[in-house]
Image 1 (cartoon, rainbow, N blue to C red):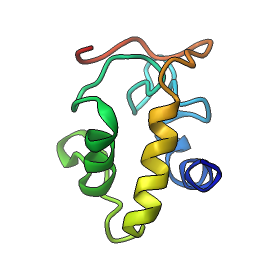
Image 2: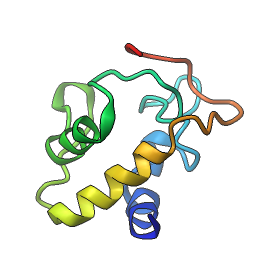
Image 3: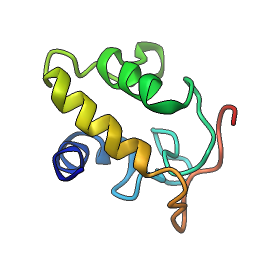
Image 4: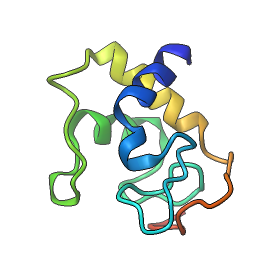
Length: 95
């Protein structure tokens, strides 16, 4: 988890905030709630991190990170669900 947090802190904070909750009006979706825009679960988190969502501004990390690093980062992101922070972005997507 520490390796995943390190990658998250270096690469994801700009769009998803340090908490993972993004901010109201922010770029990235809230990663702390149970709602998902591109499918829930570790496999979908991994797929989104690896290939990105170009039409939504989510870049692909497959050329920057190894498969293991993407797995670690995805595991960390998955662990954020339920942490629900203050001043987080409204839910988006489906449960």
